[in-house]
Image (cartoon, rainbow, N blue to C red; front, side, top):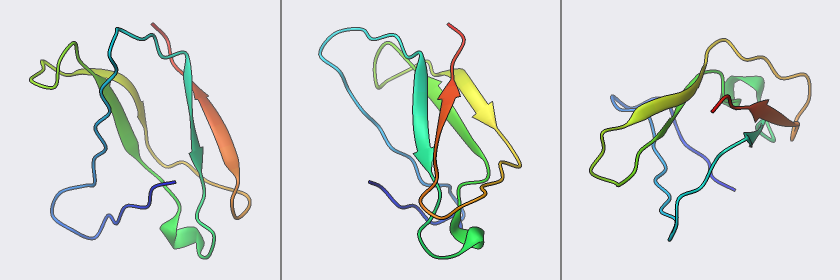
Length: 79
């Protein structure tokens, strides 16, 4: 569970390192528990062979809408 605010100059980011290469087939996002204004609406999922990059866009979403509070949705990724 992670909550980020989009009110700052830089959008929030989350960096995860694995001990071996992984293939992402899908990922999940969840709507906020309180207000629709707090739901994730746009984001970019990027990947790299190391934290130094170069970073490649794996998936990008804009104008996502959520029907319910705590709604979990899966997003497929093309590899």
